[in-house]
Amino acid sequence: MAKRLTNAQQKFYARLRREKKVRDKERLFLAEGLRVARELFSASPNSLVALIQREGFSAPDIAPERTFLASEKQFASLCDVENPQGVIGVFEQPTLSPTALFSNFSQKQSAIAFALDDLQDPGNLGSIIRSAAWFELDALIASAGTADFFNPKVVRSTAGSLFALALYRSDNLVADLRRLKEMGFAIYGATTDGEDYLKTRFAAKSVVVIGNEANGISDGVLATLDAKVRIGGNPRRVESLNAAVSAGILMAKIKERNA
Image: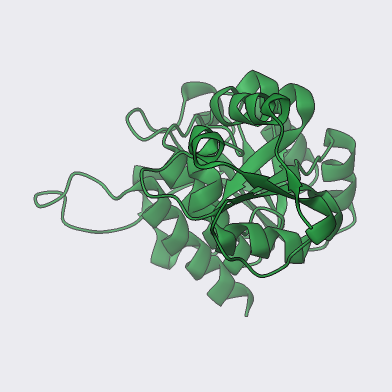
């Protein structure tokens, strides 16, 4: 029989939902919804810390020994949406050190990573993670100013794909891109003034940079680029593409090149 969620647990998990600093310190995050929780559990069963189930919600057994029943009021305090499903998972954050990232890359003859330069919108970030998992990227690298990988909206947007690829938070994106260049990577930036991406011959070891939604790629990162690429369209109708859409199009192109 599932245990009751205590008030102390409820208050702690509510802080995980609200506060990035608590998520960072505890290395935990919340995954709202049965589908997302189930996909994450399937990918990494040992990462599940607790499964919180709302009273009266009938859910299939995922991890009965780690399941806690919450009252309507307790459950509502943990939700980030107006019409929540009846399950929330508490998971350990996957960790990837700089040593592990660069050691892994040093052993590859071909590798594709995307770098996010201060991408702000959680929905965009979640969609990019999901696309990166679908297209089997080797890593997704985020600048310090990019939205939190484990923000509740990001987690929902990933549809359970957070554990499907390497996620790396860079303290200094410019320095890390320069290090990748020294390892033989070509660095591409998605811009409005680059070469048509359909004509670009992406290198076997490539990093593609997606910039901030409003300001694009920062000057420091621009200085590291080997080439700029753009996705052609009609700017008289739409000023630019959504960042997540642009990333998905470029991922599909690179996947086709490597097929």
